[in-house]
Image 1: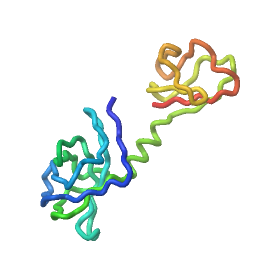
Image 2: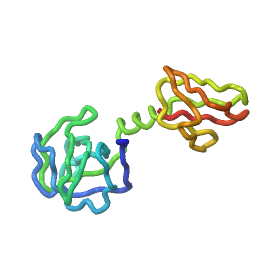
Image 3: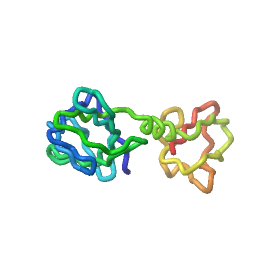
Image 4: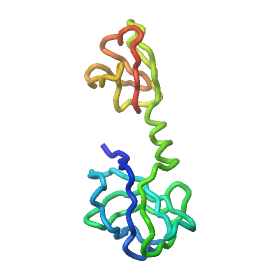
Length: 161
């Protein structure tokens, strides 16, 4: 399953001139990048030399050696030129936070007898009191999750979508 990846304190130098149409950028190192699977992405920001000027939010979709594949002009920014020595940083962006916010769709409390719960869309995972529930313990139809057994009284049920 494709997912957004994160890493702390990644700030690397761009080792070439980057035109507004480039979708691959050469950087000083990718040694601390997290391992990526097909479809994974990392949000980043390109900061102009000296930190002055307009920044650009990018989506990193792959890397090999020091070559990084990017999708330009994300989250309302636009693709632009950057000089050698500009900085590519992994950053938490507004879009990243909205994506994470939207991952938790619904919390409920177990009654000890209720087996059917309404959710906004098919959950990718369900936790009861922090414990992952195997997919063979519930079904999803339309907007309803039906448990094979009612979650115990006063347990917290978290539906991740």
